[in-house]
Image (cartoon, rainbow, N blue to C red; front, side, top):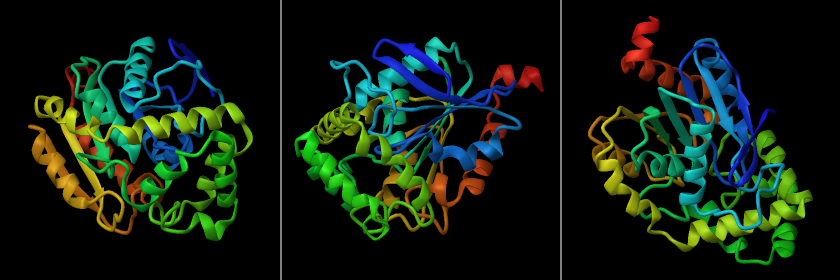
Length: 288
């Protein structure tokens, strides 16, 4: 993966290149960019797809010791990523906690962002979200070494498939989940930063509530996509999010849990592509 030096340290990212307008994809806690492999495979022929490996517990390179690992701090890191790569006409996409971070990004004025897609994510007061989120928040209270021992249990597939782990997050993404766990299982510094990020995110449940004021004035198109079978991110939150933003629409995706990017990648990619086509920027109109 290519790397970029940001103020917080070295961040790896995926970049398909190409002439299409950029689609920047954000993942959640204990996940990496492979969350988006299926979606990117569908979008890459027409769009430039980029996915930064965020410091949420599955990154392979630790950032600076004093970096701000709150959701707002990571949102600022995403903003810096867009700026350093000089991206314009961006479609910002987030699933799970990536969608929460995307809300914080678009909640502040950013001329580089043309559209946003929020897919089954934390919203309003849903932090930590559901059984998996509450379990992760409790585990994050442990010292990093004990947190690592706790996470060792997830090497066993029956444990990973429990509702308190990944069982309610994805129907079919178990192999990906096992890969996501490797950095936190084997790298002490990643464990330390994961614990700090979890504690910071779950200590201030009002962060997303505070973002609502910014979302209410976000005047660009937004597509809110929700898994109809989601047990972690309430579908009514998706409908409420769509009502908050002036140019938002809402659609449900069947046969999926929270991680739509894993369970229904082709359908999610189709929705993103159609959304971009319906809402062209002046640049994309000129290219056409």
